[in-house]
Amino acid sequence: MEKEEVMSEYKRIVEKLFIKKPEVKGKDKVLKVADYFGNPQNSFKVVHVTGTNGKGSVSVKTAVLLEKSGRKTGLFVSPHLSTVRERIQVDRKKITEEEFLTYYKIVKECEDLLQLELSFFQFILIMSVIYFRDKQWDYVVIEAGIGGTHSQTNFLDSDYAVITSVGLDHMEFLGNTEEEICRDKWGIIREKIPVVIGPQVHVDIVHEVWDKFSAKLIRIEPKEDQTFMMINQQISNSVYDQILLNDCNVGKLSDDEIKEALNVSPPWRLQTIERKNIEMLCPELSTFPQSVYMDVGHNSQAIIHMIKTVKLIHGEDISIYIVWSFSWKKDILSWLNILADSAKEIRLTIAKHSRLIKLEKAESLISNFKQIEHSNREWLHDLEFDGDLKANILASLSKINEDQNENSVLVIWGSVFLMEFWRDVFFIHQLKDF
Image 1 (tube, rainbow, N blue to C red):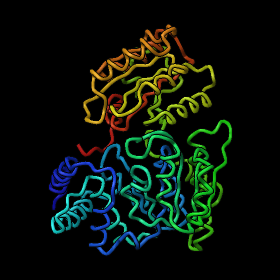
Image 2 (cartoon, helix red, strand yellow; image 1 turned 180 degrees about the horizontal axis):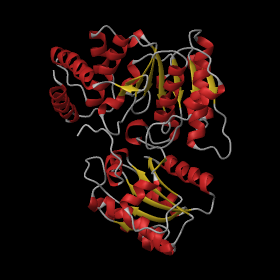
Image 3 (cartoon, rainbow, N blue to C red; image 1 turned 90 degrees about the vertical axis):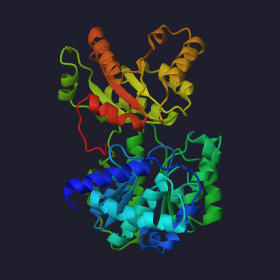
Image 4 (tube, rainbow, N blue to C red; image 1 turned 120 degrees about the vertical axis):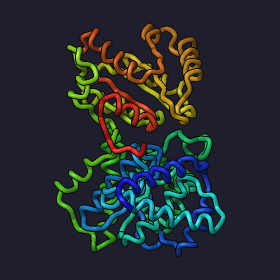
């Protein structure tokens, strides 16, 4: 096919995939399809990464370390920010549109033959393991879906398991306490494999893992003033060390090579917007914040660490202005309580996406928060809500300019589903499926 034909067909197929019915828990269908294809997941070593926060960053850093050490490495991550092809990578290169169409057809034929209806996630996951098998990769780093035991990635047998952190998120699927969630995430562990766990993983459950799996546990010890980035770097480095111990074909990297690999992150993790993009959006500004950040986050732990990181970079007295949007399923009031102690100003916004909160719901939440929580704090009367994303960002920049507050940062924070809209506001153009 010509390039135009390929792109047209690719977009048509992606649209079909996007309307598939979601399915969060269960791996029976995936196992059945994998068996049909001869269990391609058994043809490479698996580094399986789960955790409430940090699993995407650790997956990327670990894959880069393996790639630099001379091992052919595949990477499966989710969700994607711009194009679904981000989910399937080999040596940091996305699967091409042509390859995507080829493997779509392979899986679609199986789906029809077995009379199954795979979810979007299941379909892409199966595509990826067949693709990785055919490419004859040595290692594949797999970012788990939700949890561990019930993650649809858990049909893979881990050679190395990683639990980055445990916090309260996806409670409707994983449990109502951190202990219950932690137990679910242990589901990716297999007998006698190395298991690297972050400092926020419950120590009291560690001994159960020793008894049950005879696993080799490596725990990153908690330290003061650790940011998520530092923790994720330590976890990834520990995973690499364990692989180095067990695989003589993995090259030993120099300190500089390790540092370079550990500094690689997925996009939009407290990522700085360049000054020229701010000036293009708001050329009349005379006072600029020290930085404008975009940051993906989806739970209370992420908010706490975002604030902590900003203050470590800019100092405790930095004024933090926030533009924020969120998924309708999240515990918004608890988030607002955290932000109330740190933010100079919060502006809440929405965008047209099925996973994001709707206007009426957001207005009701904010009204309740103003009446019940922190009612004695004057700044809460300035809590703003507007459905116009660009208007909110401009309003925050204008407020910083009006206050002549150079000791400030603007953080545009929240759901991954908003990233596309935020990038467009700042004239940041990236390849998108639509």
